[in-house]
Amino acid sequence: MAEKPRSMVLGVVVAAVFAGLGRMVIQKIKADKAAREHHMTAPLDKETRAKISDALRTPGK
Image (cartoon, one colour):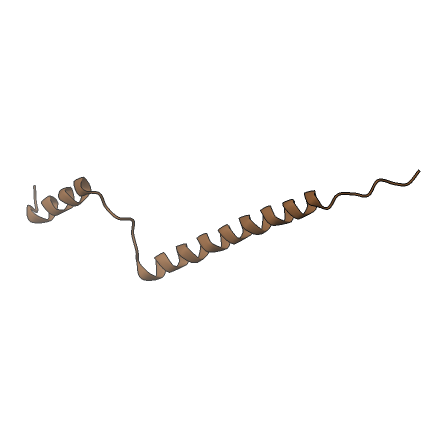
């Protein structure tokens, strides 16, 4: 009997998944590096900004 040919679909899917994950990791590394170089921080919500503003206006409190 002839051997059953192996399907290449699984290999292609696995390669695509690894390529996608690798791309995401590289993008994350680049974004983190850019954030460190430009001293970027996450945006602050209104409550946090108000607390910081209040603390700066009334030192020693």
